[in-house]
Amino acid sequence: MAPSARQRREVYERAGGCCEYCRRSADVRLAKFEIDHIVSLKYGGEESSDNLCLACAPCNRHKGPEIAATDPLTDEATKLFNPRQQNWPEHFQINPDASLSGMTPEGRATVLVLRMNEAPRIEQRFGEVLLGNYPCQRNP
Image (spheres, rainbow, N blue to C red):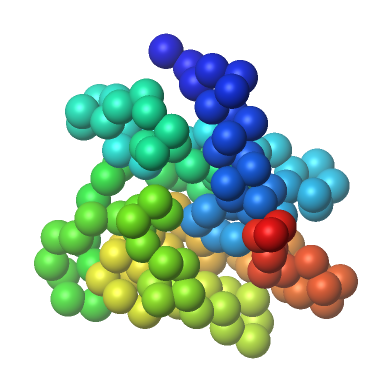
């Protein structure tokens, strides 16, 4: 079942038009954004707004139904970053070259699974940094 129109509006407004995983702006030309189930229905996630977030197409495509992965630093299992329960700046760092670093097990696993540092994505973010469009800042 797809999110309702009301839920889609609520998710978009709550996210301030920002991908809640990589902090890309939906205002960027040609950016396609989708509603993600943070905990997929496959793993018992609900259709409630508390389980939905705004994600750019690459983040949503790479995340798929995943909710956990291995932390590449410790080789231990960890949950992926949850934008409803966790604060982005505590889990991720934007590097000078526009790559992203995970600062916690959840952050590192999320960067890896969502392939946030693929060359085209870094290049896109770097261009957005130069234009002053990255990271996306949530609207008040």
